[in-house]
Image 1 (tube, rainbow, N blue to C red):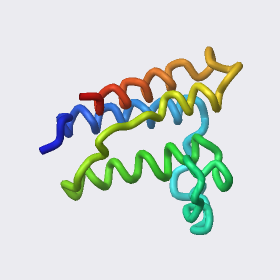
Image 2 (image 1 turned 180 degrees about the horizontal axis):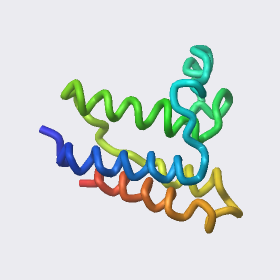
Image 3 (image 1 turned 180 degrees about the vertical axis):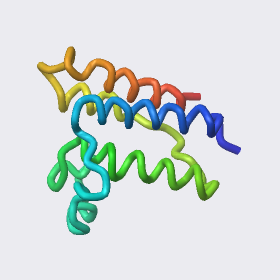
Image 4 (image 1 turned 90 degrees about the vertical axis):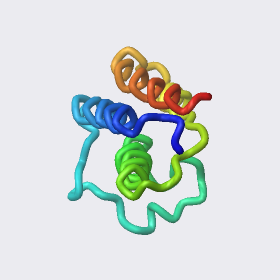
Length: 110
């Protein structure tokens, strides 16, 4: 049984998507990286994608697929620290997205 309510999780994912869209990072199906980009072994696929692409095409897609399939959710999540590092020096512009990611991370805390 998941520790987090699935409706709450879906709403948190929607919040992240909304912020990605607001910032102009959302690309949808037409902006999807090629298959090779997903074969990265680096955290957050940083050698093959921008962080915001990873958020859209890996994090959000996988968590939404797990919700739909009823699959096991991750035990924990720590994405906000990477967002803070990625957007270092531009925090004010990305504050709402980082806060949405922090809320998502917090939802997985015990």
